[in-house]
Amino acid sequence: MRKLQSFIQTKIVIVLLLIIILSGACTPVEPSTPTPTTIKNITTSTPTQTSTPEMTETETALPTATTSATPTPDLRLKPEDWQDWPVIPELSPVMLEVYSQGEEIGRDPYVFSVIGDCQSSPTYFLSMYDEDRYTLEEDQAYLQETIDWFAESFSHRSLTVKNGMTAPGALNPRWSDSELCDSTETPIECEIRLNNPAIILISLGTNWLPGTPYEDYVAYLTDVVQSVLDNGVIPILSTKADNAEGDYNRNLATAQVAYDLEVPLWNFWAAVKDIPNFGLDKDREDVYLNYKGWDVRNLSALEVLDTVRRQLQEVEE
Image (cartoon, rainbow, N blue to C red; front, side):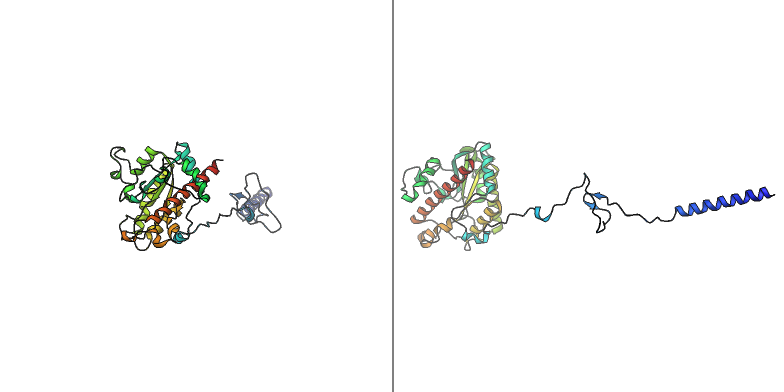
């Protein structure tokens, strides 16, 4: 009987010990000091002020304020300030890249073309420099190098110069020369294929119908410029002397496109603003240039070509 009681007591003790052990296993254990785990620089626990987690090989240090990049401020004049833009433009880094791309596909650095209406016809515009009908003043003698550089381009009649030419027309195959161009080629594409210029002067806007939306003109002119850029050619936009639309919104639109695409703008309006009637013929609806206006137009265009050519040569050197 005593052995049985002793056996029962022993069993009870064992059962009680098991209950104590099992009940202890379900009780939360207070954690010791945590070890930070870093995943993509985000720690799962907050280190104390006295401890700093050590960097592991897989961790990347966060940049300090002194190493962060500072954006280059855009100091260009805004499109709405186009009247204050200089007559002669500076080339942006974007245009230098376009020129390099043009070189790779064989664009001729000695050739330029023109996109424009009748006032861009070589009869009046620039052919004088190929036909020796000009005189350079002493302080203009440096321009002779550019006249020689672009010889034959001054008298070239671009396929993109026609009476009534507009931005939509320059993009429309119906305006292309059917004898020289493919049926699907736009005047721009055809001119670039046949003349292979490195630069194109773009002078449009007067023939755009008054009252049509400003946004439409911006869109069409953007397409014209983009077509030129896509062919590895530098476009040079030009403002105009006349104000046929009444509020100069065509010049504003031209400045907007030049600003957006970082292309050079020849501010012809600024070149004639200080001469009587902006160099326009009062007897011809103040739309066509008079003799004085043509003198300024031809000379300032030559100065633009000279400046652009020199900037490109400096980069190559």
